[in-house]
Length: 285
Image (cartoon, rainbow, N blue to C red; front, side, top):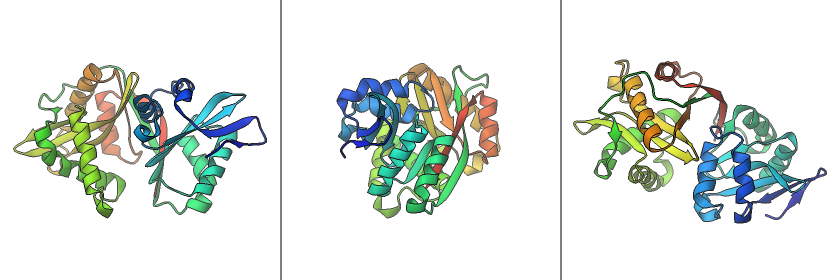
């Protein structure tokens, strides 16, 4: 994609390694909200193959002001009315390639309004997903049985991951022949020391993974308690343990986002000590 210039002074282009410093400066405006994209940018140095997609930039008077990550997820970053117009126009032209749009709720809502006529209908729109964070350990006593998952336990962990994903997203991550790729992703998290669980008698009781790590912030995903153990007070101690390990060994700030209607999970996170850091939204296809 070449440069796209609008009637304003703005220019839209695919970013490359030479843009790394400016891209990181945009991401640093909201370290918690932009954790996922920052983790990809920092880990890849804006090398497209390692980035897992493309990063578009919107520059005004030569200075980057907004970004758009295009991978399996489409993620707007610090978009403005002008940059959203330009991004949406280009996205309509190339067609939908992502399985979801996710990010700050206001930006996702406005972007989706522009894309819906050509990209719709969505399978589901989750308009309110509280973004939460912790900068200290929990006052809830941690579950000492929660630990890093070992590589020889990947086959024990995967059914729990599949169950959580299916419950959360509404489709199995193994659908459409994606089983090998999904297993590889979970195995990668285990090898990186970013999968945590309490495992007893060959089954997962509670688990979560760290899906993204950027400078000073990590994002927890896949929080799950085995159905037969729900309602027994296991979630809060398990989450407390994961927060403590993550803050000590991964990043000092731990974040996650949750569906607003998941009242049970929200009570657990409140008890653990998470505080509000804004609001996300997700459009699922």
